Length: 408
Image 1: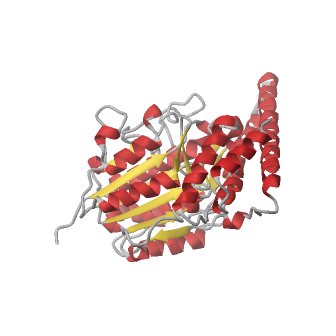
Image 2: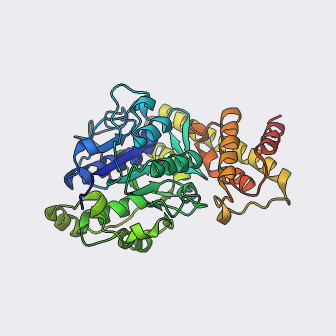
Image 3: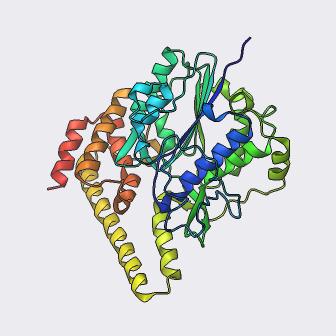
C-alpha cells in the first residue's frame, strides 16, 4: 500500500518578551521535525518572530528552550510572521485553501487522503479559546468545524493535535471519535497550565511543562518503537502540576509516533538520553507576568527605572482586582441558578454552547477587558465563569445583557 506524506504545522500564538517560551517551543519543535527528515515544504511554521532580535534579548539572534540549551532560532522557516499569524490564516493553511489566506504566496498544507498531519500549538488559552496575537483568538467551535470539514473532504488519513495552553482540554470536548483525529492537551478542560525554566539573565521563562516533557521524550526515544500512548503515559508520569488529557480516536494512540514524525537520529537520542529531564521554576501561566516583573524589580539598580517597574506591577495588580470584581458581580447575578465549578468547565452539551461562548467572550473582550493587552491578560483566568454559564444553557443574549448592566 502506498504511504502518504507527513505534514506538520507548528503554531505559537503569542508575541512579546514575557511570552518568549511559546516561540521558543515552536523553534525547538521545528528543529526536531527537521532533524527527523520531514522536508521543509511539508512543515508550516507560524510565529510572530519578535523574540530573537528583541531589545530585551541579551543574546541577539539567540533563542533557547531549556537551561543552557542550544540556539533553536537559526534555520526556522518564516512562513507566517507578525500580522500574518491569525486564526483565519491558520485554519485556511491547515485546509490547504491558498485563496483564503491573507498573505502573498502562502505555504499551506496540501494534504490528501493517504497523508498524516501533526499539529502543535502553544500559547495562552481560556475555556474553548486559544489566543493569537493582534486581538484575535481561535475558538473551539471554529477549530472543530474545520477538522470535520477536512475529514469529509478526505484531507488526511490520520491527524494528531498537541496543544499547550491553559484550559486546552476544553478545546476538544466536542471532537468526534470517529474521524481519525487524536488530540493531546496540556491540561484538563478546567485547569491552568504552567511555565518552566525561569532564566534570570533573559528575565523570562524558556518553556512550558507539557512542551518540555513531550519534546524531551520525542528526542530520546526510538519513535519506530514507541506509540503516542507510550508518550502520554510518560507525560502523566513526569508532569508535576497539570494533568494531560486525550480526546478523539484512541486507536491512533496505539500507532508508532514515527508514522507522523519520522524518527529521531540515533546520535541525538543518545545525547538526550544522557540528559536528565528536571522541570524547574514551575509557575502558573497567569502569574508569569507578575513573576517576571518581580524579578526585574529585584535586579534593577537604577532607582528611577525601578520605580517605573513598581508602578507597572501595582497597575497590573489593580487591573486584576477590577476584573475580579466585575466577574464576581456577573456571577452573583446567576447564583444560585448556576453554580460555577472549575472542574466542570468546558464540558459543553453541544456545539451550540461552543458558539454561545464565542459570542459572549468576544463581547466581553471588546467592551470590557481585552486580554490581548498585557494589562488585562489575567482576564483569561476568569473566563471559566462564562464557559460554565454557556454550558448550563444560559443563552448568550442574557449573559451579554448582564455584562452590559455590570458595566454601567
